[in-house]
View 1 (cartoon, one colour):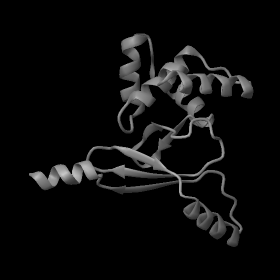
View 2 (tube, rainbow, N blue to C red):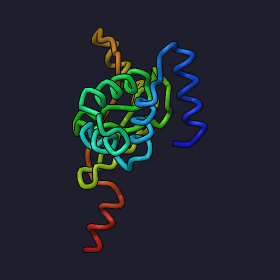
View 3 (cartoon, one colour):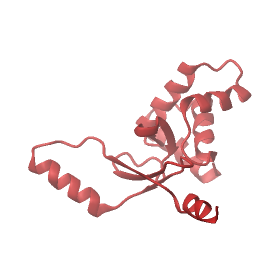
Length: 149
C-alpha cells in the first residue's frame, strides 16, 4: 500500500468520524499487497506473523469495518476479499471478473451495466443498496499458460 493510499484512508476515516486502528490498517495493507482475492483465514495466518495473539474475531471485525467503509469488497462466491480499486468511494457499483484457476479478481466499473441494472430494478420497484456483479471464467494468464501445455 503506497503512502498516498494510506493517507487517503486515514483522511476518510477522520472525515467520517470512524477509528482506523493499527490492526485495521494492517489488515487493509495485507489485502492491498496480496495478489488476487484472499480469505479471512489466510489473512489471519498472515496477521499472526505480525500479531501472534490474533484470533478469527480480530480479522472478521477488521474486515467488517473495511467493507463498510468501502476500502475492500467481499467476493461472496469465493468467500474472499479484495481491495477496492477506488478506495473509499461509498456509493459505487462494481463488476468483478474472477478466475476459477488462479482466483485472481479484477474489478471494473461499467456505467452502462450499472444503468441497465438500476433501470430494471426501478421497473420492478426494487431498491438497490449494493451492487456487485461476479463473473467467473479464466483469466488471460491462465488461458495462455494452458495453451502452452
